[in-house]
Amino acid sequence: MKLSSLKLPAKLQPYRGVIGFAVILFLSNIFWKYNVLGDETDTAVSFWGLDISAPFTLLTKNVAETTASILQFIGWKVSLSASNVIRQETGNSAQLIWACSGLKQAYIFFCILAFSRGPWLKKLWFIPLGLLVVYLFNIFRITFIVASIDKHPDWFEFWHLYFFKYLFYGVIFGMWVIWEEKIVGKELEHKSTV
Image (tube, rainbow, N blue to C red):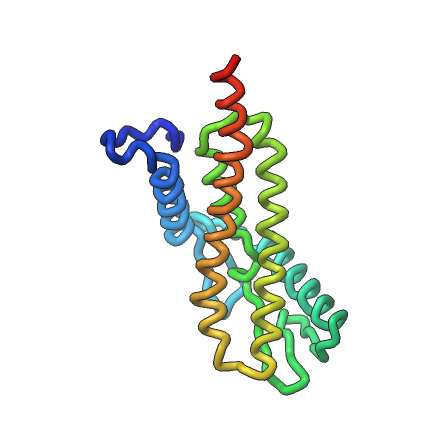
């Protein structure tokens, strides 16, 4: 199902792309929620009974190491344990688990672009570029959260569960808008003038 193939009433046609984006976001999120299973206190992740922990473990370790390195570079006194716990000098800490890897957001971004209109040749460079943006934003998100809990550990829930969760989806939406308006829109505009 392509986003552009949605049949909608005439009043909703101008919003077809945004509605399609929301539908794919919702469906990919639901698919993930009920098929990619893991406990927040465990490192085991499964998909239809198959152990898929390895990429989550690898990426979570990378995110933890990168976050600790960035914080140390800018002057924070943090340490990183083997279990991906980043501990502040004040004793406050955050443990990065498989859900902190950013793989869910990368999967959602991929689904949205895969089901969006536009040529696959352009998707072949835009999707990897978008995945890089997802990775970098995730690093920024985790770094900011870990830094903020140094003096304000009670802010963790707000930053983690609310602010950055929805900002992440905003970043994905922004990349989709760039795809629709700057990449596909220009191509369609070019074709209509030829």
